[in-house]
Length: 95
Image (cartoon, rainbow, N blue to C red; front, top):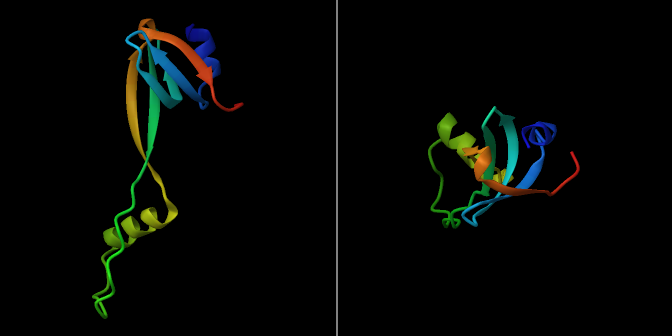
């Protein structure tokens, strides 16, 4: 199974684990007995606040955070899953 998982590095897959959980993720690395995947979740945008007049210039961190919200970037979580816990792998997109 490790050989096939290595061929899928960079691919979005749906993993079903032995306990019945399903994980949609991107395969990043395959070790001898584990798989590292990135799980993406869409960032929920906060509700827009009404304009209350001129505001002070935003700091660089605030500007970067605002750019991420406008582009709809996703949060990424890294998971390490033992190979023996994977029941099956379904490929979402061609790699």
